Structures are given as C-alpha cells and as structure tokens.
Length: 253
Length: 257
Ligand SMILES: Nc1ncnc2c1ncn2[C@@H]1O[C@H](COP(=O)(O)OP(=O)(O)O)[C@@H](O)[C@H]1O
Ligand SMILES: [Mg+2]
Image (cartoon, rainbow over the protein chains, first blue to last red):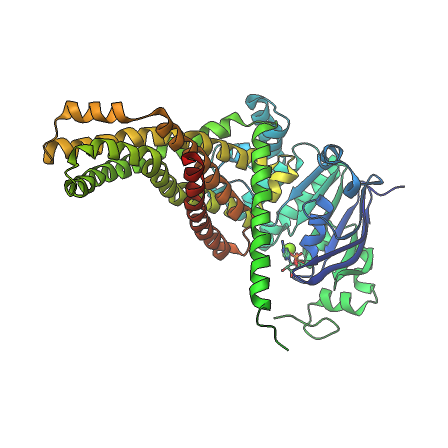
C-alpha cells in the first residue's frame, strides 16, 4: 500500500542551524502518526515543510506518491486542498466571526454562497461540539479549548484526506485536553483520513497515535507502534517518555 | 588581518539585498492586484478604513497648512511688494507639493503602521500560514485590497486636501490680511493649471502604493512576537516616510523637466 503522505530525506537550515537533517516519515490513510520530541527540535518546521508553508532545502514530499515540491503551482494548490491543519495557537482570524473562520475555505477559496457556507459551518461546529450560539462572536471571546474546537472545525469542514495537528493540547487543562484528544480520534475515524500530529504531551500522544516517531537533532531517531513505546529499547525515547533530565538528551534551558 | 572596509561593504550589500527584497515584494503585490481572484468586499472595507476614516486627519492638516502658508507668503512677499501673489503661491504650494506630501506623511503614520501591525500580528500568530492552508493567497486576500485601496483613495483625499488647504489660505487672507474674497478666489483659479493638480494626484497615487506596500512588507516579514510586530510597525512608518520624500523629489524633478 502506498503511503498517503511521505517525507523523504527532508533537510532544512534556518538561521545557520541545520534544523532538519534528513527527516523520513510516512503515514497511510486511516492511520495516525504522532511525532514527539523536545521544544525547538523542528517538529513544527517538519509540518510546515509537509504543508508547503516552508520549502525544504532537500528532500521530497510525496502525496499519494507524487512529489509536491516539483509540481507547478496550480496542481500543487489542488493537492493542498486535501489538507487540513490545526495550528498550535488556533490561528483563527480575529477580524472575522467564528462561523466565517470555520467556513473561510468555502467562502473565499470555493466561493460558496454565504447562507450555504454558514449552514455547513454550523454543522462542523456541531461535530466538534461547539455550541451554535458562538457562531456570530469573534474568536477572541472564546476560551482556549473553544478556540481549538473552532480551529478543528475549520480544518475538517472540507473533508480533508490528511489532517495535521500542531500541539493540539498545549496550553489546555488536562480535562479539556482529553476532550480535544477524543475529538481528534473521532474526526480521524469519521473522515477516514491520515493524521500527522506533533506533541510533547505523552498522554495525548498515547491517545491519538497508532504509531509514534521521535524527532531529535534533525532526524527521526525511533519509530514504532504506540504499544511498543514503553519497550522501545531506545535510550532517548525512554528518557523522553519518563521525563527525566538526565540521559542522552541534554535539557536546553 | 582586519579589513577596515569589510563592515562597510557588508552593510552596503545588506542594504542592496533589502532593497531587492522590497522591490520583489512590491512587484508581487502589484501583480496580485490585477490577477483573479478578486476580493471586492475586502477592497471596499479597506477603502473605508484607508480613505474615509482618514478624512478628519487630512482635512485638519490641510486647513492649518493652508492658513500658515498664506501668512508666511504674505510676510515674505511684503519684502518685494509682492503681497498680491499670496493666492497664487498658496494654491501652487498646496496642489503640487504640500497636499500630497503631507497627506502621504499623515497616512504613513495612520495607514502604513496599521497595516504593518495587523499583518505582523497575523504573521506571528500563524494566521498567514493558516490562510495559505485554506487555499487562499494572503497576497490576494490581504495585500492586494489594501494596496488598491490606498493607491486609489489617496488621490481623492489629496483632491479634498487641496480644496480645504486653499480654503484655509482664503480664510486667513480675507479675515486677517484684508484680501478681497472674490479677488482671492479669482486669482487662485485663473493661476492654477491642470498640470499642477495632475502632478499632485500622480504623487498621491504613488505615495498610497508606497504606504500600503511598505506596511504589508514589514508586517509580512515580521518575526519574534510582540516585539517583532512593534519593530515592523516602526520600520513601516520610517521606511514609508523616507521613501515618500525621496520619490517626491524624483517625481517633481521629472515633471519640471
Ligand atoms: N520561520 C523561521 N525562521 C527561522 N528560524 C525558525 C523559523 N521557524 C522555526 N525556526 C527555528 O527552528 C527551530 C525549530 O523550531 P520548531 O520547529 O518550531 O520547534 P518545535 O519542535 O518546538 O516545534 C527553532 O530553533 C526555531 O528557532
Ligand atoms: Mg512547535
């Protein structure tokens, strides 16, 4: 079976530092991959390269086997339409209402009429269990958890093939975080899409991952099924999972 | 071995690289104004924000400058017994120079800073990235409407500023300098040539473009949280003011020749 999304040998240098030094990951349809790793290890940069928001210096990004980095812009844009992304801080547009945020792609990329777009936005809000009364308020009036829900609704509204999550639970209390994790699992199952998430929150990783990969020093140093996380035999993974300061990984403070 | 010229060379190269990046950004901004998709709603909203809400600032600036200009020219003209030229020089100074330049400088503060702060905040909170993943080009959705609105509304604002500025001069001349109102206005309009107004409006359009593109450029390239957005805002104001004054000279020199 060919992978839905595959990154091969991605290298990226930023401000003179080799942030990614040959990253290889792949994820099949209906599978959920979680990338773990310390802060500043390049998890977000990896997602941005996959999404085409950053151009890798070297390497390939294959979607359904076709290299996105070599496509002409129009075709590439069509492939990108299959992506949905939930950003770390939600990244909701604060000049628009919540429903306009959720329906942004429908309104401005697909030019769907406002009444229909609003109907679909409200349907997406129901799916992520965001009360309809918030449809007409500005995102700034939502709590952190509700902003994540709105961001998730925006990511799923056009039924993507691949969903990306950048630290979906960071900054949330444990109960809200768990609710967001449940929602992610549910959405991935319902849409039948592939999912790539990054997190340094281990309970979250265990909950949403079929497979886990660890990024360290610009490379994937370990990957395996979620069940094998505690028997990885990799000193770096063991240290990270246990959350110890001493070990092969130096805490950068 | 330390080469004393190395830092100078590096500085010049960095400056040239920055100019090149800005020029490329300006070109891409201009191109995105003419290629679909167009966002009419965004454009109209920006016309209100840039044009309509700048009217008070522009009007106040113009009336005071017109009035002060009339007084100064009266005093200066008296040295050559040339007080009667007040209306001619006031209208010339306002339409060709002070109207567009002052409107440009005021909007560099109001509009360029606003655009830099808004787009800069969208950059550091990943809203620009989010827009791209939603298959919408920020150049089309955010930058083109602002650039078009500023380029088209600034000439209108300057036209209004010209009229208000002349009125400022007229008020001072008739109330405190004993000019005859009808004569003042007749001298103003008989003297004025259409090329004076056209020069001012051409300048205004160019300044509007500079203001919007500089704000967008600084915001688009900002990084580093609130501090970075603050820096982008300052750079937008300073950058557009310097560019406006330099380009003002070039356009004037070109028209005079
Ligand atoms: N746009 C950028 N420009 C320059 N450096 C960046 C940029 N984005 C990230 N970096 C740098 O790349 C490194 C990895 O960042 P990131 O991928 O955000 O880490 P994380 O694993 O915490 O998500 C950091 O050192 C960061 O400073
Ligand atoms: Mg990150």
